[in-house]
Length: 101
Image 1: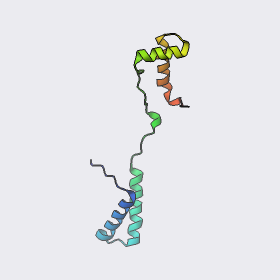
Image 2: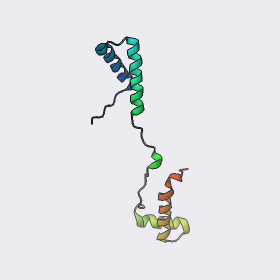
Image 3: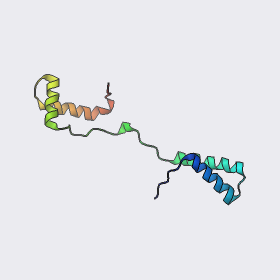
Image 4: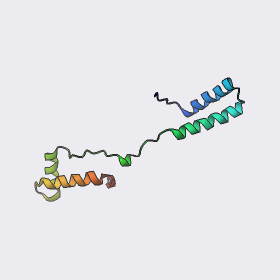
């Protein structure tokens, strides 16, 4: 199915003109009917989903070895890779609740 994108004002003018020319509708009635049609079409248009349900990070940590060592050093000054994977799992699972400062 072909998707049509048109400015609401332009669509209203086209519909008004069609109602007047092709159906013989009185100008004031054509304007009101065209506005009603455009409101219904706008209401029926799908809305964009909220980004709250989207993940913008991958499930796997970036460059696992380097990331693991860097996180371990930041957390406890040691090179323990288990800390990095646990931290990444936390970030991935709870990421939507974290805020950038």
